[in-house]
Image: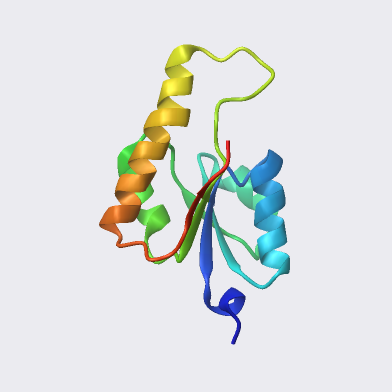
Length: 119
């Protein structure tokens, strides 16, 4: 069996933009795809039933533990919206602290695969 068939990939930021494209491409290539979403109903409606959607928020570090559990790789594409004004507090919470908290959760879950950061 190929790596794709055995691997579960968590895509953070997988409900829109590049993250959504990545999630769909991974699924098309045979990966099991888990997506972190603040609004799981909306994410499930957008992605369809073949994607695993877990509730979580980068601003709530405790919500990341479930998301990173039992994944082989993490792709982090979330960030403050580009091309529009974003307050510094949002940038720090998402683009900095969200990454730090996700890395910490991945360490605690003993992630053995790759952590890919796209921003």
